[in-house]
Image (tube, rainbow, N blue to C red; front, side, top):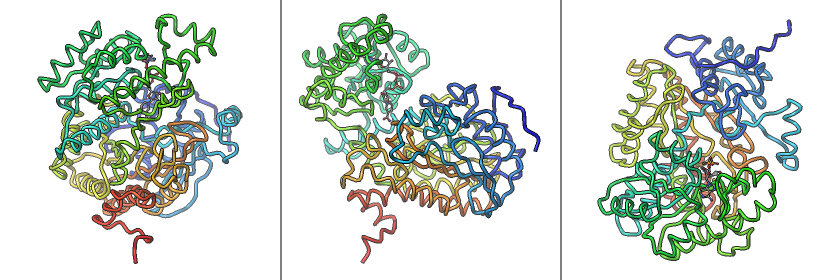
Length: 562
Ligand code: NAD
C-alpha cells in the first residue's frame, strides 16, 4: 500500500447530530468519543494528544490517530479493531455481540513495570501512557473530579449523620478545613457547598484563589484567619453553605488554628504533597518557591517534608479533638512519616473511610455522553433519573446543582454514582428514550476505571482491603473479560493510571444505547455484570455490606452457596 503522509497536530472535534459517518452507531460512537477526548475544550494538550492526568493520551501519535479514525469509518458490525497502547494493530472478524474495539494500554511485565523502562519504550515509539479514561475514550472534563469530590463529602456527611443517629445527612452546620485549590483540589469548596456545608480552604498561591472565585468554584476570599473563622462560624450557625479561600501556608495555618481551638468538624488536604518539590515549606515565600526548588532540591525536599509533618500533626490533633479527618490521596501521610512523624497514619485514606462502602454496593463513577451534542438530551436523562430514583436525595441534589453549575466540555455528558441494579435500570430507560425519539441520537454509557470492581491499586482504590488482597490484580482482568463477554462496545485494560507505573491495573467499558433491542440486551448484561464485579470483589474480601447487597439483589457468589 501507498505510505501515508503524516498530518500532524490539528484541532479535533467530534461530529454532532444523528447522521452516521461510520457503518453503524457502535463504530460511530467510538469514533466520536476518540475525537471528543481530543477536543480542545476537553483535552489539556490536544496538540500532543494528551487528554489529562500528566501525560494521559488518547492515541500514540497522529498517524495512529488517523489510522484509527479511518478504520472506524469502514469497520463492519461484525469486526473488531485491536488497539495496542494507542495504535491500531489489527482488524479481526468477530460477531455482532463482540466489542467493536479492544484496547490494551501501557501494560508492562511486572519486573519491568516502572517509569524508567516505560519512558525508554515510549521514546522508542512502542507504547503510550493511557491514564484511565484518556486512552479509553470516555473522559468528560472536570465534571468527573467535581462529582467524585461531591460524592466523598456526601459520604462524610452520611457518616457524621450515622454517628449522631440521623439517617440521611448533609454538611449543613459543619465547617470543613482543607488546603489546596489546584487542578483537582479546586473542586473541594464547591463540593462542600453542594453538600450544604462551610469550607475554609488554605492556599498559598493567590492566583489560584482568584481563579476559583472567577470560575464559581469558590465563594469568597478572607484576608486573615480571624476573618475566615468569623465568616465560617456565621454561615455555619445560619446553616448556610459558604466557601472561603484563605491565603496562607497550610503547614503554618493548621497548627495555629488547632492551638486556638478553631471549631472545625472535618479536615482533609489536597495540596500537592505527592511531590515534595511542589509543597511550600513553612517560612518560605510562595514567590521564591520555584527558584528554591530548582536550585536546592534536596534541601527543599527536607524542608517540605518537615512542614508536612507539622501539617499532619495538626490534622491528627484535630482528630484527637473529635474532628473527622482523612487523607485525600495525596500521600501527605507518607511524606510526614518520612520526616519522622510517627502518628502520620492515625487517620485513614478516603477510600477505606468513605468510598469502600459505596464500592460494596457496586457504586462508582458511572457516566454517559450525548452523541447528538445537544444538552437537551442530557437534561432528559437527568429527569429520567429523578423519576427512576425519587428517594435518592443526594443524587437529586447533585443533578439539580450539576444542571446549574457544570459547564459542558465537548459532547454534553453527565456523571453520577449509581450502584448494582441502578445502572442497568438507567441504561435500559435511556435506550428506550433513544428508541422513542425522546433523546435525539444514541448515548454512550461508560465509567471511570476508578470503579468498584475494575481496579487493583494498593495506594488508592484497594488500600487496606480487609483480607489483605490490595495488590491482587486478577479482578480488573476478570472485569475486562466479563465486559467483553457481556456485549460492551469497547473494553480497555490499562496499567499505571492514577498512581503511576507499577502501582495499578485497571479496566474500562463503554456501551452504546442506540435504541435497538440488541443494544438493550447488551446494556442490561454489561450494566449488571460490570458493577456486579464490585459486589463480588468485596464479598470475596469479607465485607458484610457487600454480602448483604449480594443476598438482597441476587448476585451469585459460589463460595457463599451451599
Ligand atoms: P495541584 O498541583 O494543581 O494543586 C496543589 C495546590 O496546593 C497548589 O495550588 C499549590 O499552590 C498548593 N499548595 C502547595 N503547598 C501548599 C501549602 N504548604 N499550603 C497551602 N497550599 C499549598 O494539584 P491537584 O491536581 O489539585 O491535586 C492535589 C493533590 O491531591 C495531588 O497530590 C493529587 O494527587 C491529590 N488528589 C488525589 C485524588 C484521589 O486520590 N482520588 C483526587 C484528587 C487529588
